[in-house]
Image (tube, rainbow, N blue to C red; front, side):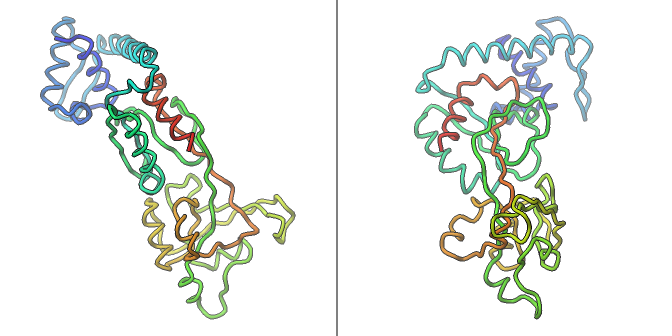
Length: 302
């Protein structure tokens, strides 16, 4: 038995909460992962996990062993990262998470160039607009847009994204009689707004008065946008705005081409929305990974 490999497997089983999740990560079978942990228990002469058909729980001995094993696994990873400072030596799997729209439109070109620069690296790219537990899913690094909640995750700010209020010409040309394009934020209450439910503020859309606004510069106004569609998908936001269903409050990267060719109209140009920070976040035990550091530098540079 490779005790280090078994220890690493045990740590990941506890972190993820299941044998099947670790099997997917390691491209092995659930029974293979279970046998590896069982072999570790036999070698130690102690039961580490209490198994039922529906759940896993640490035994008292398992709790003590897990605390030490997790620390040792992290220290070994740090030692390997220090040894592999030359980026040309990077190899193995890098698990990256991002939202669907950002992953497709902005991240994929950088993933392509990163993998071309590091041919021994293999990437598992997870795109999901919902919440992902990085530790449970075994993610090395994730791109998060917006203000971060306090957590034990390690964050590195790599940029900023601007937001715009947007509508298609079809939407604006088919407004009911008497309804016009919004001139001030409060006018949005009369319009059909497409709400992105994954935004931390959800339907609370905030704007700051610019030099040409009707209010003193810097004054912030927040409105509760309403409409007939709410979604947790940035791709649905994109499609619904382009098809003329309503007004979107979105980052510029989601509509770059359409903004360049004039397909969309920017609304309330004198009332800009606050920008959003872009962070890379990692679990603490991944913070010294040479692959994570190299990927973070690659993204930050662009």
